[in-house]
Length: 109
Image 1 (cartoon, one colour):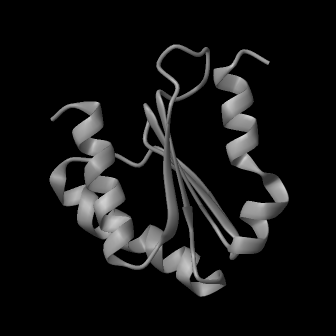
Image 2 (spheres, helix red, strand yellow; image 1 turned 180 degrees about the horizontal axis):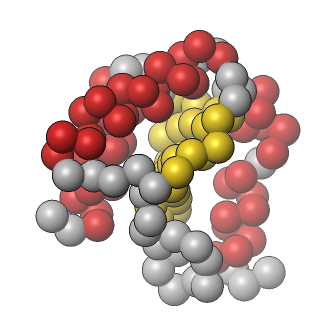
Image 3 (cartoon, rainbow, N blue to C red; image 1 turned 30 degrees about the vertical axis):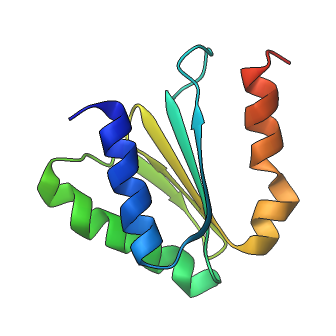
């Protein structure tokens, strides 16, 4: 399975469970810790954890490996090696503006 197919599968799993504002950032040409970054907005604190748990439940049996995670009720970052997944509440997504950071990173700023 290609990297893009894996990303599509992750997006589909998140979408099925009502994650919002799904975005994928391709960082192949950037010196960064991952090749792809997925941003997703949860409906709230408990939904954040539920989305992550659902990802692990669905993807681990399919051979995906979760190398680590930084978890809180407001934001979870899951490290899958070449893919990073950020699941955030709307407030945290707005507060940390990951889209701006990733876009600037892609532009070499």
